[in-house]
Length: 187
Ligand code: GRF
Image (tube, rainbow, N blue to C red):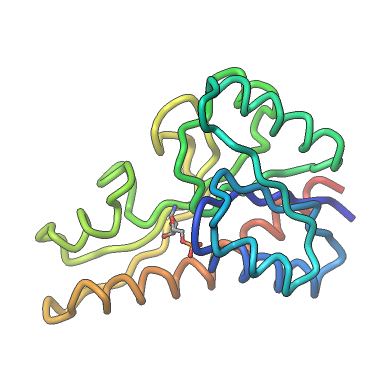
C-alpha cells in the first residue's frame, strides 16, 4: 500500500477521478491540499471522506506556504504527490524535497502550450492533434520529463466547450491509471 497526496486549486474533477480509482486499489489517498479556500475540490473531498487541508498563500512568501505543505506531506506520509489543477509553480526547494515524487497533468501536448491557458491555446491553434501530458515536476513551468501523452484528432468543427470536454475525458481516463502504476512501484 502506498499513499498519494493530491494538490488542487479549483474544481477538482481530476482529484475525484483519482480518488475513485485509488479507493478501488490497494493504495490510499493521504489527503487533499488546496491553496484556495473556496475550491470546489473541498466539497468533493468532504463527499468522499478525504482529509483536506487549506494552505493559504495570501500575504506570505511562497516558500512559507510551501513549508506548510512540505510538513503536511511528511506528516501524512505521502509516497507520491499529484498536482491536479494546482495553479502555482513550485519552488526548487519544494521540488527537491520530493525528488521525482511530484507528478503533474497538463491539458496540452507539451512542449506546446504550457501555462495556465493550455486548453484555450490548443483550441486557438491550427493543430489537428490535441491532447494531454502527464509528467514529472521539475523547476520549470510544465517542463518536466514526460511520462505519458494521449491525443485525439479534432474535426475542426468543435466548440471550445467540446474540446474542453474531450480533454477532461482523456485526463480522467489516464491520470488515475498512471498514478496507480507509479504507486505500485512505490511498494
Ligand atoms: C485540468 O485541465 C488540468 O490538466 C489542469 O487544470 C485542470 C484542472 O481541472 N492542470 P480539475 O480541477 O481537475 O477539474
